[in-house]
Length: 81
Image 1 (tube, rainbow, N blue to C red):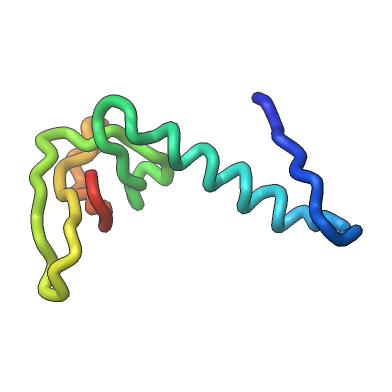
Image 2 (tube, rainbow, N blue to C red):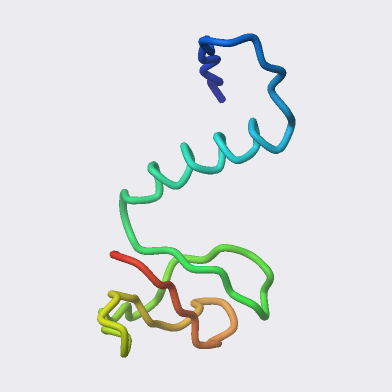
């Protein structure tokens, strides 16, 4: 894993939460490749969505709905897929 360190204009101490949030944000960008993924509450892990369907919520936001391939539980991800 490659970590980019950004020079800040004022000398600040980078906290662990800032570093973890930055790494999580960078990893989300890489998820766009391949099948859509969602978090399965029963398996407690991120899984690829089986039979993904694009749906629109009441507030007009896009979402993806499908099934967990290992346990068959319904999984849901809000956002563009």
